[in-house]
Image 1 (spheres, rainbow, N blue to C red):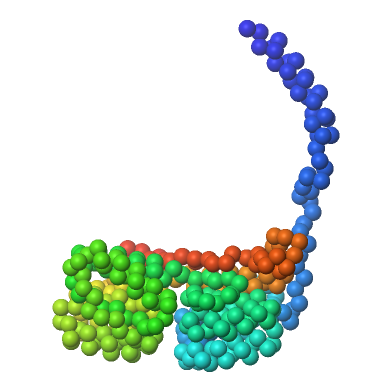
Image 2: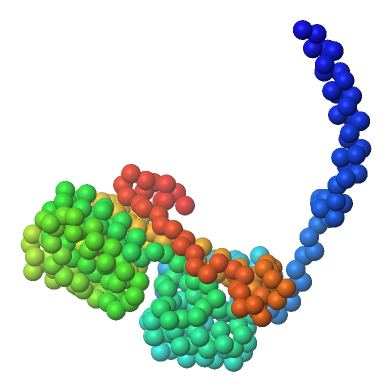
Length: 338
């Protein structure tokens, strides 16, 4: 077959159609890539405020607050971090009340306790972009929440502990009792252990997010239960406190330990074989993206209608799960390099 005979006329026909094709285009739909999006005008006095408890708590300082300050520097805006030095929810509520009166550009609130729901709603009603991070607050009408799935933290700890114990043994739980997120974590732990009838939880203990209290409870548990096989820690101070008591009792490797978070002391205890498994939160993401959501709301970066406020629409994601990190002897060196 003489292909040349067919191809040449077809090519000529296609070329002849090109002017017609382009002249038929709607020029309004053609994107001019040379045009840059107009930058957002930011007032250097624009202030975004973070309110937490235990404002000097190292984990908050090194992760949440550091990311928030870095975000402010990147955007050329003011960032303020306020709250009591102790774990004092009433003082946190009082601080939020005061901040509402100053009408900041945005308010970033650590979800410490269900009791702060009412003051969160006051901030929203005052027209302040309001984001909650870390632990969710039921009945709060925040604009967005960023944090961790605590049920998943419990589930991952449970699976790790069950594997470490080969499916049998006595286990204790340490954390802050009464906190919604840790209750969710405990539920995740329990649901895993339901699959292992030879694993028994001897009790839940409140260490009040205090290393000394966690160490004291652990020492008592080791004496009361000489056959204790494992301990699961659910707040940032549980792991170091448990580890301290385990080391003093020469029980490293004999009593298995899982815990939350990955501060330097946690990592060193994994390296030393005192803590067996960590489930870490991506805390920097809470506050970086939480602050960005506030900025986006303030400056209407994304709009979904002609008037989102009138339409009752908030143009940021309502809930964001920032995910988890698992650390054990197999990957600890990757984290110690940082």
